[in-house]
Amino acid sequence: MITSISRINDTHRVIPGELDMPKRLLLGPGPSNADPRVLEALSAAPVGHLDPTFIELMNEVQTLLRYAWQTDNHLTIPVSATGSAAMEATMANSVEPGDVVLVGAIGYFGHRLIDMAGRYGGDVRKMTKPWGEVFNIAEIRQGLETHRPSVLALVHAETSTGARQPLEGVGDLCREYNCLLVLDTVTSLGGVPLFLDEWGVDLAFSCSQKGLSCPPGIAPFTMSPRAVEKLQRRQVQVSNWYLDMSLVSKYWGSDRTYHHTAPINMNYALREGLRLLAQEGLEARWERHQANAELLWEGLDSLGLQCHVEREFRLPTLTTVRIPSGVDGKAVTKHLLADYNLEIGGGLGELAGQVWRIGLMGFNSDRKNVELLLDALETVLAKPEVKK
Ligand SMILES: *Cc1c(COP(=O)(O)O)cnc(C)c1O
Image (cartoon, rainbow, N blue to C red; front, top):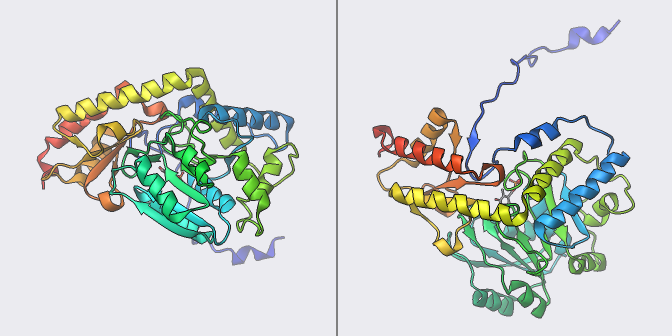
């Protein structure tokens, strides 16, 4: 006899209907749609996180991440969380209290790196540019010369602006000035040419829901031997237990000792997303993203719309489009969602209210999607309701 029954409060016992989500086409800054093969992998039966079959799968994921990033880094793993956690892991593991950290901020995510570096005790210095622009190599050299940092952090693909930061020569400069190079590759991995080792990148991170065609929830992370050495030399322990790579790497390394329970099914999903990438091949994949982006840019131009970023530095994965004067940007995105089940993003920070953000990432980088969006935009822009 359960005597407490009378004490149960039924106020919150609301029984919703069966899950019934709309099928949206996600052409915003992320998440983008997962590949159907990924969704199928996601629903496979979970095994234990130390099961021999899962350990084999972990090895496959690690190898494929090295391929995707073009790195031989031994410490290459998916963090069990979203991209922001992998971002935080780069700061937690590379910054010791008092270290000078130079962050190049060309948009929203650069400013997030500044915030995180400060929380880990970094003596943070920043270089900024107007949103939509990128640093040239002379500006980066000047920053290193002025601040002499232990860590330089840059954003390869700034999702808030659609700009691609060129990396050629930056790694060599970081060696000349003896600092580690941290790179945000969240919106470039799986869609934009990336050569981590050739570029001398020491720590990098990404996410699953943009170029890798998975749902959000797992986040690639990698650390070079130079960065691991700095981690091993630390005087003060990493001040975040969950993201401390000296602990996490014991599970992902040869020890396979328990640290936290890996999100088994998200690892299935990531493996399938990376398997798709390997089957397509990096070159074909990068070309597909570039070709579909160019098709979009031409189409926007025909509609009389203007891209925010100079062509040379445009990301193929994320395009910022200037909202024409006299048009209500929010009304347009609302109509696209309501009438076409199609999501695009609005502007962030300095670009709030000024641009739309269109993502063509991974599975979604497809000619048919570009055509659908351009047709929908043309129709919606002609509606009197979207005029200001
Ligand atoms: C999306 C994004 C992140 C954050 O990733 P989440 O998965 O949203 O936590 C970080 N940096 C950039 C450039 C991004 O676009």
